[in-house]
Amino acid sequence: MRIPHAETSLYPMPAEADEEALVMLSDILPTGFECGVLNGQVAPGSTVAIVGAGPIGLAALLTAQFYSPAQIIMVDLDDNRLEVAW
Image (cartoon, rainbow, N blue to C red):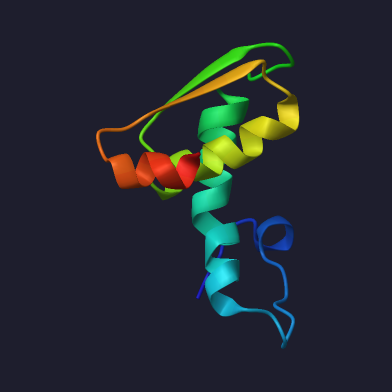
């Protein structure tokens, strides 16, 4: 298998690590952070609107909080997802 840029994008998995948790770190969390928070230029005091409280939206919610926005608005049609986001 060829993995471009493997020297900067692959990391050894500790034997005791929870594989399900690592899956979150390899896809969902970075997507919410990079595409949502970094591209959205979240900054201290800003207002953030996240459309969709699915896994990527929740990752954006969690990581946006590191930038101290004044307000985060989560939008979703599913009340159960909004409850998880609360």
